[in-house]
Amino acid sequence: MRKLAVLTSGGDAPGMNAAIRAVVRKAIFHGLETYGIYQGFSGLISGNIKKLEVGAVGDIIHRGGTILQSARCEEFKTKEGQLQGLEQLKSKGIDGLIVIGGDGSYKGAQGLSQLGFPCIGVPGTIDNDIPGTQYTIGFDTALNTVLDAIDKIRDTATSHERTFIIEVMGRHAGDIALWSGLAGGAETILIPEIPGDLKEIAQRLEKGMERGKKHSIIVVAEGVTSGTEIALRLEEETGLEIRVSVLGHMQRGGSPTAFDRVLASRLGARAVELLMDGKGGRAVGIHKDEIIDEDLFSALEKAHDFKQNLYTLSKELSI
Ligand code: ATP
Image (cartoon, rainbow, N blue to C red; front, top):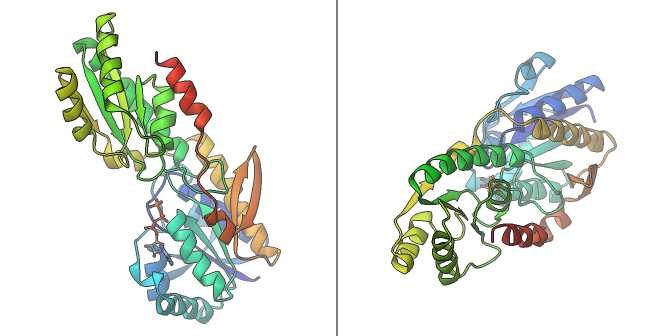
């Protein structure tokens, strides 16, 4: 292993820059050359590849987004697209690739691995939905962004004695909703993993109002249905006036938390170590505070580890 490359792909996540920095610095520390591939797999196919020196990753550890930019690239889902990417890597003499992204990005890395090119997947997505790691890079920052919003909305909800629905990201996994709802003291959390019963929620809202509750906060993951839809149905059931706040893309931005920076640094560095050990087709992750790696294929096959115990606790605490 003499030259390695790194790219970010899929939705951007805070902490991706810290991971890029770790990859570049760790590799250079061990005498390797590093290359940055810009705009994900799209930039790989078109050859948007530049050498990264130590200074290229200076002053980025605290920045959200990704200096390498990200892109969605349908072409890379095809064998032809992957072969074009492989040609670009070979033409630059690159011997290994680190892909920072979500499960879709892992599939791209898997495609290249199947073609015999050593690739390592690093979990970078705010959704926390990658099997094979307890936490993904960006989740903690997004969670704290959402929590800050919930706290602020709670202030106005209390002042006006209102019920608020806060819609957060999470198409297939409800981790952002679950964790932020628990941390923010939400009365109800709606997530894709557990179908909620709107009639029961309506009854709880009414009971709460009867015993003098000043406000109610309902957190819903976008994968369930829209916050507006739920508000309409609850208004029909209860007659209450319900406000909706859709947090949207602000959840992706912002300076990464200390947790995400440390996680990104550890995962990025381990990815380099694996390539230096001649290993490819692996995904790195964290489990019980240990950095682990496992086969890229099996990392994708397992189901996302849903925390039923957190959901149960949130129910117990929101009586
Ligand atoms: P997020 O979870 O934040 O959305 P992601 O990595 O899952 O991130 P996707 O849009 O699903 O985001 O995937 C990113 C890119 O990975 C795609 O645009 C495509 O280039 C590549 N990719 C996705 N699926 C495949 C696949 N089946 N085979 C090869 N490449 C893929």
